[in-house]
Length: 350
Image 1 (cartoon, rainbow, N blue to C red):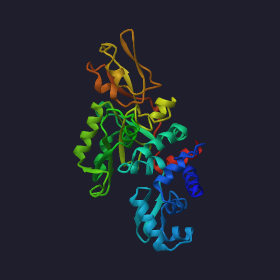
Image 2 (cartoon, one colour; image 1 turned 135 degrees about the horizontal axis):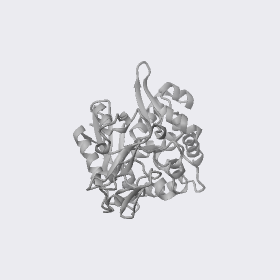
Image 3 (cartoon, helix red, strand yellow; image 1 turned 90 degrees about the vertical axis):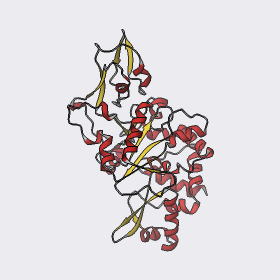
Image 4 (spheres, one colour; image 1 turned 45 degrees about the horizontal axis):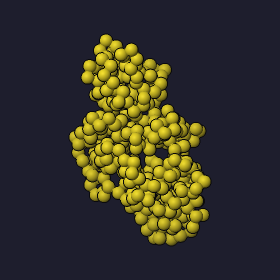
């Protein structure tokens, strides 16, 4: 039995998102909880490229009807992805553990699964969160972006929401997982946003609540009030979700907090600056900063730009207007990979 799950684990570890091996083998227990042996065997023959039922059947030396039932079953469990292609019918592809089928267990996660994930994260999976290019990147709070500059579209959450045709919200699996093991925080749970170019994409989903674009914008505003940073996939295009992250529970930010890696999340194109004439050293901004980039020296807030990720949380908390975001110099700007495919290529070289 373990050989079946080991083959799937090895396959997942070959893709850029990785699925590191551990001495304890806890990653195999995670796979065994999610996949039946038959599903695991078939999933290990998939790739990140979409394949037809016929192709998968040939790889597995099985009948197409049998293969179709297993594949559809895995899609319903959130373990693989389906797409309908003209001339090919239904096609299927492997998806990573994170970001991928782990997040899709939102409605099914229990204490056992939460404990397995925690053990795996600490024993090995954290390593995938501290590799450059990062899995996620920061999107600044939009109202903190200077109005007198040309902002690249990937820095504005509203552009992604405007381009979508449907919107949804689901529970943050990071906070759910932490609560299940008794380490939860007090931040809101239902605030992970998803969006799609397809109308009605979330109307019939169990774990995603369909909402309007206006409600999605309200959730972003609530995240600011709660001191949460916006983050999303580290690409310019093919973006279909926005997380609202805290350093206490977020699996991405924990790479920075627990393991000291500044590569755990990619920075925005901005950093905070202080008008010394307006700063009253109230320290509110220091409490808001998740990245420990601020300190008070001689009654003035000082920004350490090496730790500033340009999220804007300090700016929205500054009652005197002393803090603002400033765009980096051109030589400092590091655009995110254009697409998921480009991200994968860069990750393979890391």
